[in-house]
Image 1: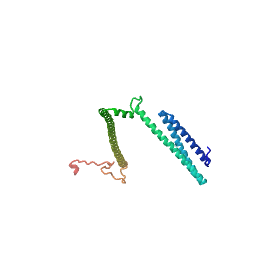
Image 2 (image 1 turned 60 degrees about the horizontal axis):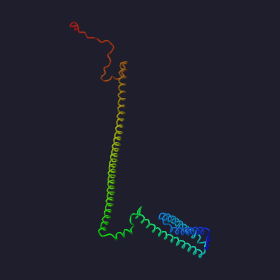
Image 3 (image 1 turned 180 degrees about the horizontal axis):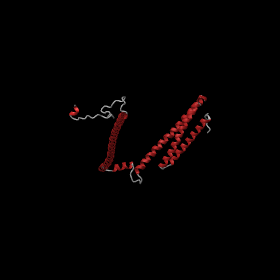
Image 4 (image 1 turned 45 degrees about the horizontal axis):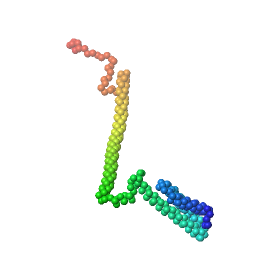
Length: 271
């Protein structure tokens, strides 16, 4: 886009895009005045808001490029470009203020539509004021009591919700407490099992040692018995072997020579 300000191609391109968005915003707000439907107005405002965000981004980009090229430009040119930047910021702020005005107006219209309801049978706030001015004191008191009753009902409903929430919280706390106690019992049982396993391991070790000791004793007894049997066999086979001592409690074998038998024949024999 051609301009009277001395700009680099990059700045000129950004400046042209900003001006295009400004024209689109101007046309958009003009169209907005002709739209009567609040929903369509809201949609149009959303589109214009998006364009304003894009303008803000482009102005920031314009400022960055301006600072990058500031050292290469004369002071007079930098002043003109800064003035142009401030002018674009003011123009954007004017559109932002215009958007706020339309948003406020649109919000009031939506509130009125909400008060009127779907069928338009409910009175608006202005009509309520007019109706209140025509009501008697008794009617006003009745309307106030009705409003207070509705408020009390709403408070009661809120209390019920709070009570239900407290009950749920209490039940949850009780469940958590029960689960905590159960976890504690499980931990205690695990400790007991671990202790039992440790005692059983010690008992198995002691039994193993006793079995090994018994085996050694049995082996020693077996060797003794074998030695005794060997000595007995040797004594029987070779009774005159003096190198082997007699076993205590075991009589030596009887001699093979014939024994003399003493015969008492009476007095004749004694002579």
